[in-house]
Image (tube, rainbow, N blue to C red):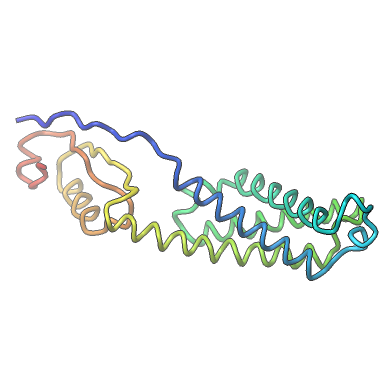
Length: 196
């Protein structure tokens, strides 16, 4: 007896957009706090039309956007990078260092940002992104245990190894995978109890 073909759900980018939103929030808050704690000379001498709040908003948006570009370039929105925390944190630290170097380049050519603001902004950005991403990881693990946001897996081969993989994925849904089928000899499938 053959199973009916499985209808695949459309690919969703919700999780990626959620993670990007959390990074935007972390970068924005970090640079606003740094701008408020260490105002630069340029802010105090800004023209009337370019008010202090607009100056903070502009510089914050510029550094947050730069941070997102750097994070994306470093692969921080790819599952293979974010699966291991140490790799993810290493990429986050490198990304924040690159943003700090870019900010230092801006500081060398203008008074838009000062060194104290750069150190505070990048340090706080790293801390906040780690905190928010840890919360995201915990939330996603709980969602996957409840059967949401799972990636579908098709196994090739019906031997002992496939049986162990199926058992592992059933026992640990927080890994984010669900077996949808097995391609292999029907007698092997039945022998190892792999039929759905």
